[in-house]
Amino acid sequence: MKCYKRGRKHIAGLVKERIDSWDEKDPPNDLITWFLENSKKEGHTVERITIAVLQTNMAAIHTSSNTFTYALFQLASHPEYAKQTRHEVLDVVEELGWTKAGMNRMRKIDRFLRESQRMDNLTSFSMRRLVVNPKGYTFSDGTFLPSGTLLLFPSNAIHLDEKNFTNPTEFDGFRFSKIRAGDKEDSPRHQMVNTNATNLSFGMGKHACPGRFFAANELKAMMAHVLLNYDLKLEGDGESCRHTGWDFRIVPSDEKILWRKRKN
Image (cartoon, rainbow, N blue to C red; front, side):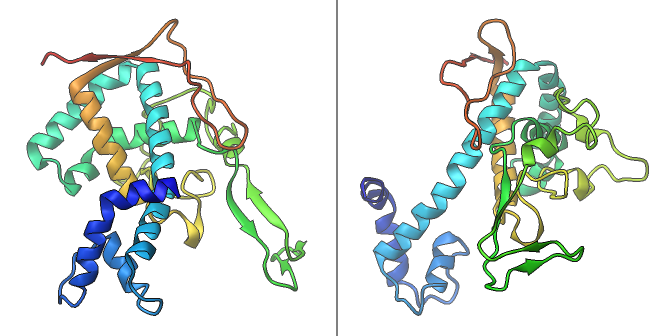
């Protein structure tokens, strides 16, 4: 309730304004409009739409912030990647500006973030599925799961399996920039938003995270800003950060990154 009250102060006015003008022919194509369109039967209320926005934030903010935090620790641990990636950002921004097309061209950042996700997956398990059919579910190979069975995929173990990756426990910031013969550099298979059996950071299949495209651009924009404006290093001996937690993993509070404003 405290969270709702604080959130309401910031967005309730905008929500009410949008409800009052709902008959407009061309409403903005954004999250509030989507919620308004999907709540026609229940009726538009400030409380309902505000809660929906806050619930969406709960799913989006901690995942993006933790992913970015781990990426910053990897950058501070491996400063050799900063120079090449910074040059790419400068070239892209000069040519395309801070646009979606520009974000798509920031391939080194994209691949760096994907490798960081692989090494520092937010959870040990992903793609939780529950068998809801009263009759259970039978796979094509005959494996039967009774109703109520909970399935989880060991994403962290998959990401660190030597059968899937060479030297899986070593961070290689440009691992996914090493293009296979015949592949194009911007092939979707190399992008962080790509989902497959060895990249479960965003899930897989028709229920893969629908917000991963927004999240990828958000993360790339923040990383580009950091690269252009700051130099980073780890405090102390320079070792990579540890993980705390078993399923959902977080950075220990005693880990620190030193920031220095770039002069040029």
